[in-house]
Image 1: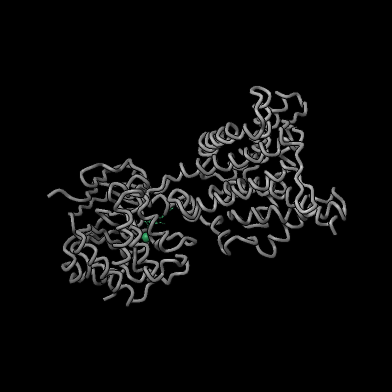
Image 2 (image 1 turned 60 degrees about the vertical axis):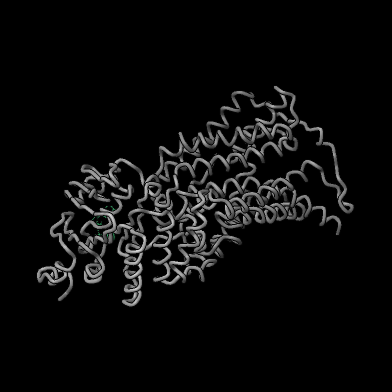
Length: 296
Length: 238
Ligand SMILES: Nc1ncnc2c1ncn2[C@@H]1O[C@H](COP(=O)(O)OP(=O)(O)O)[C@@H](O)[C@H]1O
Ligand SMILES: [Mg+2]
């Protein structure tokens, strides 16, 4: 019994990280209608950013958040402005462009690091907390708290601020949003920046946990796609809950069946969900169809 | 008196295809002017070009004394120009209240923003009842009301309406037009009303233009056009 409980906790902690990554991916997809294939690489860049802060400045990864997250926000804004915006109105080209970014980021990091695996150690890495008899590493617990805080903040932001509402308006009808005086291109830049910042946050938080490699983003992106489809396109809480569901499923299946099945399980969930309920668990029914409508 | 809106020899279209072929229109402050014509005549293209969604290929659009032909759509609400697009185009998964707030986006943070929300719901009592509902769940008439109210939220000097009567019952059409008239008369709002429903449009407007294949073919006082045998035969099925 406590064995299963342990596995579920492991899954929840993993799911927190998936949720964080998915939230940014989902935000970008929901608002800009771009599938950002480079999202895993943004996480990877966040990890290496944390490493650089450690290597150059001797910073603890948790301290480097104040540098990495804003830097990734700016980086995201620049990607949107100078790579994706020139291709606006050509969705296929935008998808190819994000795939191009994926290759560039991977290979640039590979060239610079020559493939050496780094970790960014944190003073907190060795701390284990005991929650009702279950031992949880503090760094994973922090990731869990961070995803909860990010979900709370995001859903508060889009519900309660004019800027957040404007982003929702852009999602639902770009032309009408323009007629309201909303600068749609700015909303896109803000959104891609926020998505990249979330990826940077995720990357920094897992920097003390995983050994870095230029391809590490690939480990997360497939799970993140499954999370987005499971939770619902464009839904913050969908990504949050979906992250936990996928994390727990992966942990349970990995323990009782075979860890190497995890990719197959992601895809089974992905395809099953698309057939049964394309709006996802938490998406508004019909909202996914907005993506199919003409947007200008 | 200087015109609220003056359009001079406007050409616009989509890619190579020209739609507007030298349209000239002038609207005085406080007037209700209708632009009527058959489906495909270029009415929506005309409004979208004025609103900055389409780019003019030549000609001038002078609003409130300023040439706005080069401005983009998001820059116009702050200058006092609002368009209620065909079908209303509300944000379906936002509440009525949120839709109205978006209408006031160009003057968010100003002290008038809150009072505007109150004023508008006084003007459109039905929207107060529906405040917390998703706009996508409104009936056709409510949707059109909400779209007009949303445009009024930006405190426009001039409001353009693209076929507000489409899909509404005759009774609702009457209500919507009455409201437009009241907006113009009580708030001094200038109105450009585009319609295929020629009879109703001529009844509510002061002056009218008839557009056909991207050209203005008639203009005059609405009452005169309404009693014109050729107009009656061509557009009113009389
Ligand atoms: N997005 C578009 N792309 C190409 N042609 C269009 C587009 N929208 C309208 N048209 C064409 O422009 C002409 C005028 O259309 P429109 O301005 O919508 O007329 P109306 O509003 O009077 O019915 C029509 O021939 C129509 O087919
Ligand atoms: Mg039209």
